[in-house]
Image (cartoon, rainbow, N blue to C red):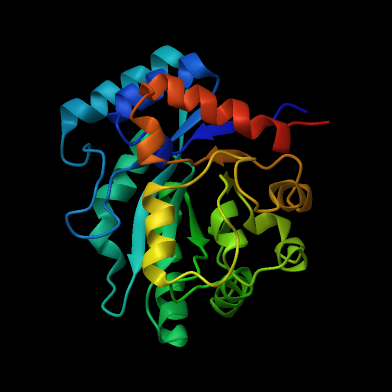
Length: 270
């Protein structure tokens, strides 16, 4: 069985959407992930929304290369949440034939977060994408158990999903049994990288690693092998390795190729 790989936004953050598609094609990926909405006001992103030329260029690159768009970033569910804030993102996702949108939970009131997640899933349903809730230890969805609980309490929406990121697995209280307990139909893809594991990091340290200083698979001590052995063998893999210092000496295509080469031994069939 051949594993499907996607070049995540954080592995190609220096690229435009169209360039990311081209680089994915020449380095062996079948998909890309794009951050068309910043993770915080003024944060880094790729510009495509409300830019028809950029959308046409990206769709053309997809057509020319056969590389698809797997996931789009990012929707954050905060205390004041209106799912229609992201209408332009849903429409772009439909045009790009994206499969998923990454969702983060920031609302400390879990009942309200749950209701808003259910509402988001209802709004997204016509666009053909899943709403993949990513647990991150510094957010209101800190581990796999909480992500599953929120989705169950939301009524298991048809487009619901849980995103497993190796970094957040290694820095949360999530266990391998928690990973195995996630129903298969909620798993649409998983993200691979490495880092120093542990639950002793400050919020600032965790965010810095996630956004600036991930390690290539095998260069840290997260139990990546056991994690991906616990996940379904046919699950698509998003290769998500940003390391601003190491990337200084590597062109985007070189970095994408290195990230894929370092990831394959942990997830390819043995």
